[in-house]
Every structure is written in structure tokens, then in C-alpha cells.
Length: 166
Image (cartoon, rainbow, N blue to C red; front, side):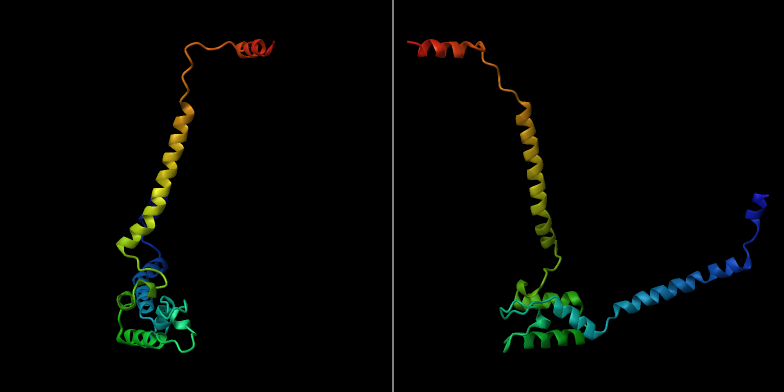
């Protein structure tokens, strides 16, 4: 009897449910696509928080409250123009880094060199610790060779007594 049930065509409501799957996938794709087109004001705010002001106030660019700051106005104007042109976030950050140096970025861009610079020091430390543990275990497992003629346990004490008695 179970074999006959599996050969039956699906119920009408199940077929209707599966026919809506392509529509749901298209709707999800459109929703994800519209999320990529962020509002320019939101992009301006996010990018402004990813950069530092170069005037030595050590503040985030968009929050620089340094009175009479010689740099923040021009930097914010350049950022606003780049966002309104529709430049990508990465190209804006690279342009600011090229113009003001790497200190303008609050966190460095993830380039291959930066990946290596972040991975190598902890890896060297880990290898060093593993090597140190192996070296300590090797030292611990090696035994000092026994002298050719081992002194008797009480021989040194007897010798000291003889030499100190008058």
C-alpha cells in the first residue's frame, strides 16, 4: 500500500506551493539587489566613520569637532563629491589613502600585504612556542651520564669528619 501512495500525483495544494517557489526566489533576489543601492547619506556617514581627520586631533573624520580645523572641511567636501558621483566605497577609500596617506583610514584596507602582516606575527609566535615546548621536552628526557666511578653515599661525610678532627 505505501508504494501505491508514492506513485500518486501530488495533491493540488502541494503543486500550488511548489509553483510559488520561483516567485519567492525572484522576490528575495530583488530584495537583496535593492539593499546594495544604499542611500548616499548613509554611505557618506559610513565612509566618514571609516576615516580619520588628518589635522592631528585624532578623531573620526565625520565627528571632528576641532575648532578651526584646516582639513576636515576639504576632506568632507571631497567625500561628499565622491559619494554623489557614485564611486565605489573601496575606490573612495583608496583615493583618500593615496592623497592623505595610510593614517587617514581608521582601519587599513585588506590587501594581500596587510593579510600577511596580520597573519605572520601570530604564526611565528605559535611556531616559536611549539619549538620551545619541544626543546624543553627534549632537555627533560635527556639524562646526564653517570660518572665512571660513583662515590659511596657516606664517603664524603666520612672524609669531612676525618679532615676536621684534630
